[in-house]
Structure formats: structure tokens, C-alpha cells
Image (cartoon, rainbow over all chains, first blue to last red; front, side, top):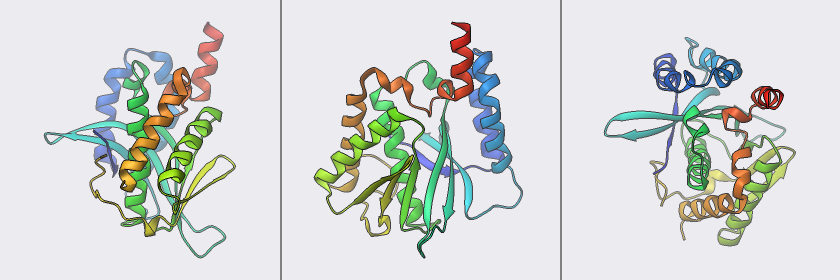
Amino acid sequence: MSFQLQRLDAHLFSDLMQQWNALFERDDILWDHSKPYIEHAQRIASEPTKDPRYGIYGLVAKTNGQLSYEGFTHINQKLPKTPDAELRLVWTSLSPKYEEKFDRNDLATVTFSLLHGAILLAQGEMKARSIRLHLGNVTERDYVLGIAKGLRWTHPNVEIAFAGNWLHIKNVDELHLQSRSGEEP
Amino acid sequence: MTFEEALWKACLESAKALGDDIKKISWLLSNKPAVARERDKAA
């Protein structure tokens, strides 16, 4: 099971909130402090004019036509000090359901889905040569260092670097993906 | 091994290596700074 990155508009974000509100009702503190992050994302998703270089993307599981919103992230397309665009993933937030259970399979699924989905976007609707994933703390840096080590072993041609609090995967436009749907092997 | 297979394996193996630190991932809403501060005060 993996999730797809799907751009959220006002309607889809409203669906997300319907699912998440039931979970927030059990935890007032969590809602009070999550509110700014969520309302900020909702404002961006609900803007009437779609910005092709900035959007809120849901981590969406699709089962029998039903959508389950597992999280969301901000994705923007930047032109840094090079002529090549890059995609940046920041402010990722997971569904409150993961407060109750979040294991290694969940983390692997979310991370695989973010990175694979970003590469698909970079090869498709948000053309870019590299992707960056923001790392929120030391734990994430340790975790992603482990991923980089694994990938360097099996795919030494994939260029992976760290810059500050960012994981940087370069030349993603040259990667050949077997799956276009985001399904993990 | 395809890139997807390698990526999935790397994500899973690294997640296993985190052990209990998995609960410190900042993507969890409870690890957003304000929530963590509030809970620390209440504890």
C-alpha cells in the first residue's frame, strides 16, 4: 500500500477536514496547536487561481473509489542559483490518526510516497531536475541518511546530497520509474 | 532491483533502525513545536 500525491483544492481540502475533524474531537490540545498549520494550508488550497508553481498536495490512499487523506505537504517549484528548477517539499503534516499508531511501515510508506510522488511530479506537471525534502529535526536527518546510504548502495548513479536541513536528490528527470501510480513494489 | 524497490527497501530498513525514535518524526502533528511545549508543561 502506498499513497498518491494529489493536489488539493477547496473541495478536496474540505473532504480532508471532514475526515480529520472526527479525530481532532478526541484531542483539543492537538487541534488547538495544529489549527494554524492546517488553516494555512487550507487557505492556499482554496485560492481561486491555481498557482502552477505552488500547491498543497495530499497524501491520498484510494480504496474502492474512496479517498483517505493520510497527510499533506506544501510543494513549490523554485529556480535556485542554477538554470534548473527544483521541487521543494515542506511543512508535511500527517493525519491525526497517526497519533495513536505510527510504526515503521507507516513511516516507510509515507516517505516512499512523498519521494516517489515528488519524482513523478518533477517528471510531469511540475517539471524539475531535482527535489528537496525539508528535514524537521535530527531524527529525520538520521532517518534520511539511512535511506541515502541504502540507495547509494543499490543505485550509485542517483545523486543524493544534504544541504542544511534539506535532502537533495538530483537529476530526477533521468530516473526511470517502473510505476507511474505510486504503488510501492 | 528497480529504483522503486530500492527506495522502498531503503525507507523500510532506515525506519526499522530508528526504533522508538520513530515517534519523534516532525510530520506527526503532536511533534509540531507548540504541541510539544504544551504537553511538556502539562506533564
